[in-house]
Amino acid sequence: MTDKISIAEDNIRRIRQAWKSQPTREGAGVRLKRAFGFNETPRLDPFLLLDAFHSENPDDYRKGFPWHPHRGIETITYILDGEVEHGDSMGNRGLISAGDVQWMTAGSGIIHQEMPKGDAKGEMWGFQLWSNLPARSKMMDPRYQEVKQSQIPVVKTPDGATVRVIAGEAAGARGPVREIVTDPLFLDVTLPAGKSFVQPVPANHNAFVYAIDGEGYFEPRESLAREAPERYGEGSLLLYGSGDAIEASADKKPVRFLLVAGKPLREPIAWYGPVVMNTQKELETAFDEFGKGTFVKHGESRN
Image 1 (cartoon, rainbow, N blue to C red):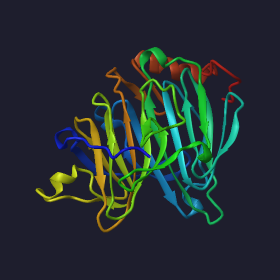
Image 2 (image 1 turned 90 degrees about the horizontal axis):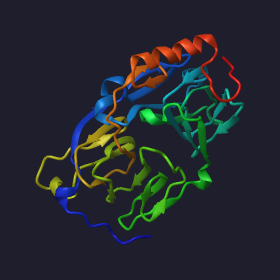
Image 3 (image 1 turned 90 degrees about the vertical axis):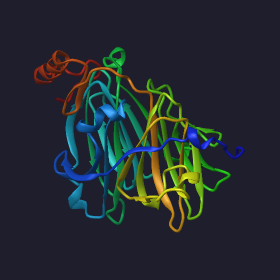
Image 4 (image 1 turned 180 degrees about the vertical axis):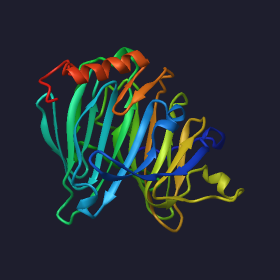
């Protein structure tokens, strides 16, 4: 446990923009809610896309995401309930279960599949976040950071929050995902009713919150008494402006949310489907190689 964080109100970030995730389909017909994607990318740099999937109907997800390529990005899969079987062109096979994280750096290219299985009751709940790689790292060797639930620190703050620290630091704990070029912060925060949470965020990072469950306030507490506060609930994406910290609070209901921040790349983007490069020529090269079977530079391709 650390001392209570005290940060001046004028240094706490204010919500710059807020919107709701929208239903969509991906893969072989998986029903998702997309929090952001191609159109929002410049505002959320280095993050490219965030999808949430939550269903108790296996028909919504069982067809999964069959073999497909990635290059130039990192994909972060975080599971709350259920299981996802995965495999790739490097010969890796595994299972991502409730509480686990898979941080995959596609780099120069990988072909993989992800097949959701749900839990014993059929529930499947999780997220996939895409993070961009800088030009100098887009053709790096692919790699994984596979993190099991037991490896993720769970800490209680003096103000009453429970925080799962996946990447970055919070409440004196450091997350197991490390050595990521965009220096990300990735937290899963639960606030009981009547509690609050303050988290320092580097001033040069872009930051957002995605509300998972319940509802809460995501502005400085001091401002709530002066202004007409707005509660945000499940499916809300909150993009923050400048500042050194994020503050959240819950009143009559608890709230659970993801807090994500990262250092922007400020580089040009050429993006089509699962490949994100810096120029159109690089993008065309990637798909030409995929068609020729030379896309994967490391490991045996299953294309």
